[in-house]
Length: 459
Image (cartoon, rainbow, N blue to C red):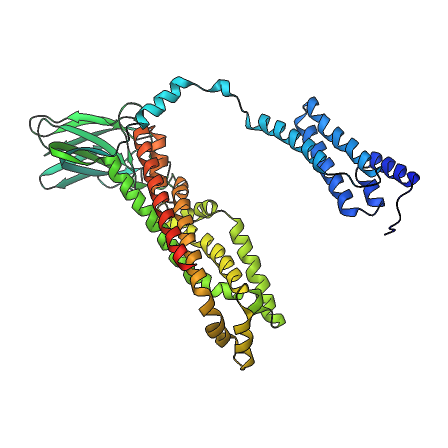
């Protein structure tokens, strides 16, 4: 490139060229990256403004075009802060419209209806004695459905007909329960998630048994009965539960509180199992993805490139999307969620582990190699002693991440407390949702503190 200062004619020509094609004047003056960046930025902004068609936003590409001419015709390069500011202003305005921000839509009455019950989380209740009976019922119907009758310890429950479809009316009967006692009638889907049978499916169906401990009523198959089913046309056995309670003094976990605790434990267990499975596969893979260990010959370098590429592809797919795939393969539940977390964690941990290996002190490796050691001996005596503490720290950190991810994976049927949260949301149980929020916060804060302390000791 000619280092002599540009003449006035050259500057003028650069300005004219940039006026014709943004960035061309800069390219002619040897500023190729600057010119291409200006052209791309101008085109992106222009097409975005055309796409949304707001006349006022055309000021942004016009301002960038004018700045581009000024920059090309100047003896020294101008700061790019100004065109970036023009672009950001237009992007912010477009983003405001795309998001549809409208605070006038806020309804304080609806907000109060949600917040007030959430101020009273459904977690504990007065201690009581429990008497339960259930009966299976098939939804939807198979050609020859099983009989919806069940007897247990002097109690008998029946459903007529033996099977049904969503929204169909059924007659349920039970005998042998406590006489003259309130009885909750609840529907459970095949994976054990309860569904309300009261009005609008947002309240509990509560009935009272007669003096012989029997009751008969009609129910409708819940509209959400098949929401979580991988194939709604596949007949599955659901259950209708009859629950009675008698106070015996003191307090205990409520039904929702019990479900929250079970969901919380499942979530932590999913994260733990997924992390453990990921470590088993990530450690050997990380050695194949370490540049300093795999660059010795063309074959090992090819393996390094292939492994790195595969890891990057897997890391680019969110565990939530992977969970959708595993829900189809292995069905609803925590197992699908654990597999999804494990696959994503393998890629993430292998990448982190390989970077640790690449950053270790090369001295011991050279020393071991100088003795004529092979690849395995080099790894055993020069690499492993240096990587155990950071490997452990990254593993704990990944477990921490997996616990957070496990709460989200439940939204797509991956089990755990996230699945309970989405079910409570469907039935608008705000007190239950409040309990889930508290449980998630406690889990995340507690594990974050524990993992931080453990990593402090290791690193």
